Length: 608
Image (cartoon, rainbow, N blue to C red; front, top):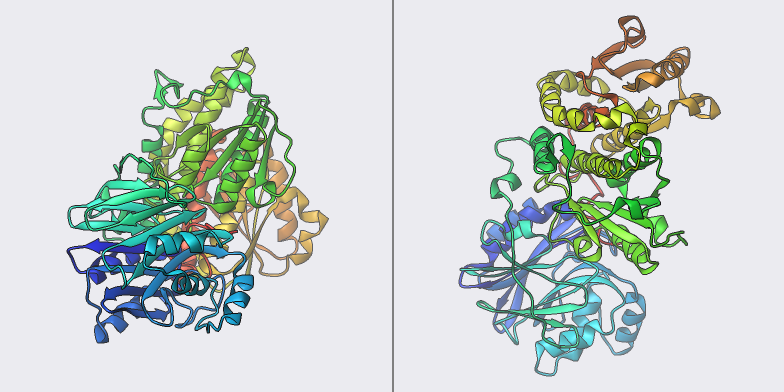
């Protein structure tokens, strides 16, 4: 939700800023801009649209200097126009600000400033900050920033420069991510480590209500009131190549194809002698837990739903899966024997962070499942189980989602070992390790048949409405498949528990309506097939994603079928996810859309 970059050093700031913005464009692409210190003023270049528009504009108006800040925007306040693009400057062009977040009291502050004679050039909440800075300046940029942030309510990550003090960048964080890189060629500021990973692996991670002063060779971290803070450098161990397309046309396809590797990496070191072994990274004692709550948003919420299934249906532990945006404004019932699990790809999702803070304040034990080790959620919780998917750039989550599922299966296995009477556990849970270890190879088999999904994408490209049906685990995966299709192809789709058809949804089925049926759970085959036939009686066209063990006569119920490889039904959601991702990808491509950057969406939702 907006990307921030900053650079101060011996090199050309424009080059570093544009390189960083390219890595951060997944966070928003409504507009982009940079500001460079060029005494006695600051010069900017910014425009609406994707980063490529800024690249073209800079050809005719290049900016020179070794200190600057940049921004790629996901619009919240004010439409995506040139004058609403960041960075924002004061009327004297001596202060510039980039901002990720929302200033909740911006209207009140704006009214006060107008009474003082300040005029505004944009409709954004961010411009309030830079206008306040100009009024607060009394010869010390750091003090001016401290005075301004004391007046702000809401969430913000800020990068500030001034031609009055061109040898520094001021950074401030509250509820929005901000990291600092220390390299041999200078110091970097960004919303995400990816922005400067090719230049340095040495990182400082700012916490909430912290301020940093960046110079070419030094970083000082303080509280927002000025008290010094000692902070260790965090060394990043990602493979830089993982953050590049590596010859693929789109990051989304690359990340879909990386899933066998991501699952292997996520399982590695966590299975020992045929059993799940999390003892080296998880101090949590399952015997002290009598209730589990999963909180998450979007795709991570769909992963949490499968976590709920595993804990309730297989382990017989009461579980809930709740939308983080609702949880944080509810009155959750938790005790010190409740485990609240926050699932977040980025670890910066504002609603999930808020929910976890609430749960912890109420006495619950907290655990995070995330793909980013240096993220906010990691520092908020009692326990951590990272996924090892590697950087995920495409806005629509693929490998992060299946890696989250893999971790949830491991966690279920960890809890199973703590059961007093393991003889009462379902056979599928007892065979969990064998099933999980087979998944990567089975995923590779599915990916070898991508042409099938490419052809199907071409067929679906002209559709306006589409339905996904399933029961049990299939329904939970159908929810994610429907979301993917909506995100990438902009086709209206819905996922339903197929037994609910007769309670209203069947009214939407008409001649030619496409229905994708998910049948991978043998105990529910007959029930789901009965529901599929009900749609066919109303003229639907049906496509089946089926288990290998569905007999041929029943499989022939569908016009087209794709059979999953042979793996235990318990872990079939891991395999079933791939065809649904490929359907969304190829349908979006066939419709001519940018599948890496779907409209109106951003990768990391760091505001409410």
